[in-house]
Image 1 (cartoon, rainbow, N blue to C red):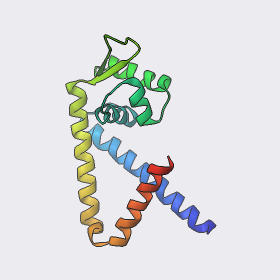
Image 2: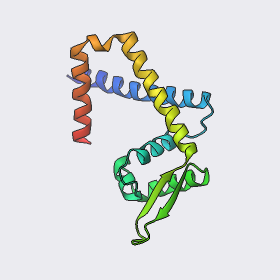
Image 3: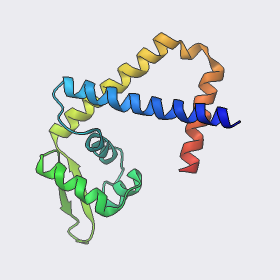
Length: 145
């Protein structure tokens, strides 16, 4: 059992690190100068129904202080802007600029290309056991973390 745990841990870490590394390299090739962390903050903003600082921090599972640091940098780089609710000044909203939306379009294209390649090269759609295992892993991480 210990050997299996080591193998699974190594595989998960390797896959995660490879994806991040390839993702960063591919985005740099098309002129994106943001870090992957910054791109993922933009993605979280886009995917948050009501993009307040609190909701985005929750989605990213980070503190408000950590998010504030990232948002300050993204505001300075002109990828987002922030504004306060007129009725409740404590609520701070974040809005993506057109430049940020273009970065996310390129990021999404990378993910589409990566998934298409994985399906083509590994024929995942024909391997029901592997697909079910990947679903189980995803469900586990969603419920556990």
